[in-house]
Image (cartoon, rainbow, N blue to C red; front, top):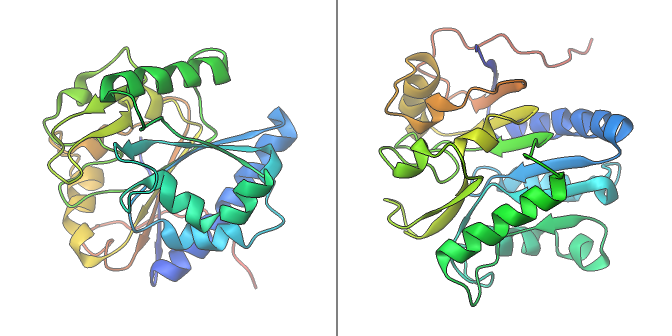
Length: 249
């Protein structure tokens, strides 16, 4: 499928536009299904979005269930923990019980057991194969997405929902990640990508469609795929559009 491509001047503009799009999707989901399910991305790029998100009292927090699309297998107090970062950013809301954050267990279990337990959570929550309303994704310089790395056996998984990653080329080496079948079942998939160092992987993944790039395998079966890029990340694209952002007079 051809992704929607939206290009913004910088990360701030990208993050603000992404939040407005997410708010529209959230309202639609709550109106039709009484809940909004989101798989969150880790890394540095989405942090500004998460900060802005926390300021929005008009977002349907109590009807939203956040999951981690991938996680580093470290304690929640570790600086590399996606769960820990989110708890810091959304601490007041989470402590008040205003919203729901579901994360894999990374304490006192093996990596394989953590993957199995998290998969069980998904099956039970969705009552079948999970279909998220929104899946946020990022793109690494090696074209990895979530914690699906080039050449990794996890890319071939077709049965499991969550798999352990034991030798990730980017530290921490041990991780958990949703598999391609889960990612490609989402209703809306949204990439947030910024920086000149991402221009080449963006080109390889979404224009050249290099099969060696895990991100090139993100092709929603029944959903939408949107790329929100800053100008530097979009520099190599031949056709930086179309973009369906609303226009204002």
